[in-house]
Image (cartoon, rainbow, N blue to C red; front, side, top):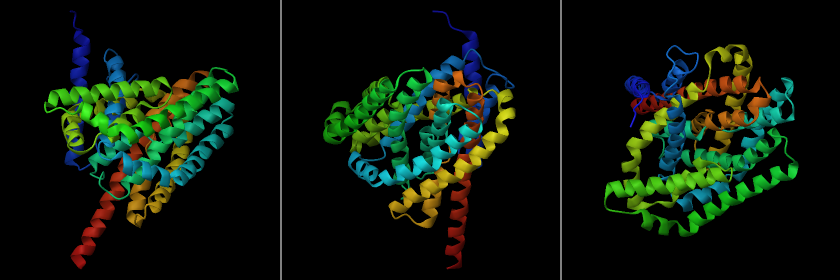
Amino acid sequence: MHISIALLLELGLILVVLSALGSLARRAALSPVPLYLLAGLALGEGGVLPVPTAAGFVRAAASIGIVLLLLALGLEFSIGEFTASLRRHLPSAGVDLLANAVPGAVAGWLLGLDGVGVVALAGATYISSSGIIARLLGDLRRLGNRETPSVLSVLVLEDFAMAAYLPVLAVLASGGVWWQAVAGALVAVGTVLAALAASYRWGHHIGRLVAHPDDEQLMLRVLGLTMVVAALAEYVHASAAVGAFLVGLTLTGQTAERARTVTAPLRDLFAAVFFLAIGLSVAPAELLPVLPAALALAVVTGLTKVLTGRYAASRDGVGRRGRLRAGTALIARGEFSIVIVGLAGAQLPVLAPLVAAYVFVLAVVGPLTTRFIGARHASRSSEQLQRA
């Protein structure tokens, strides 16, 4: 069997760079996500050290990374608690849609985009990055915080909305007719709802099927089931991330705890590659001409996401500081915005660089803002305790 020397060398260099950046971030008590994104920008096409041979592997591994991140997030919660939270946050979904899709639509109209371009840019500004936010919550040890269920409810409801939105956008971008768009949306949404209902009703049976005393067997069963469900979700134009999240929700108790342990090393490896891949997808030379528009859009929709998170957390009775943490956690955009560009960017040359610059700005600024807000509030609380 022939082994590509270039592939091994480039992958080795990538892993060494990621390891060094991860160590640097942890010494500074920061999430490594922004550094991984910057590394991708440096290693991508037009960067200081391109890795053309490894780029294909990185893109494939990135798909696995987002699936494993959402699986790990689902393992932290129970299906019963989460479905109750989803019902409570339907108004939050409405606020999220209006507050974040409208600025994108207005920006598309001001830039002179056609109807498809306006719809595409509205979707790119609406959807937060489940992958980045999942990693961020774990890095900052916020999975047990009171505001976290609010954040997750907003994210999952956004992914449900994407199940309806992406088929419609795909049909419109290809010049299809309206009934094809409606049919695709109905199939995708119906499948996701059916999967959620099945997880709620028969999830305990799935837990018994994958449970095994041997760690290797447990890992293979959990990962196999997750990949199959994620693939089925993608097949009906829903989100692979939603499929993986639902699998995590169905596993509870000791099985969930052991699944978190045995999948953690793989999750961390592929998640790092996922963030690197976002940076690789951006060509630095294309960013500068559209950077002013991207920055203006990032400022507006960063603030609207903060308002969305604050509103969602307030519905759960979270305090003022928790509401602000929830808002800043939702700022980052990422994988879905890139998917939207892939569907509609070919027909609209200005859309791809604009969304790429917009995603990159918020994917870096979002985690840094979330970390800064949390650290500032923690220091204030410590000072108040010392004064008391």
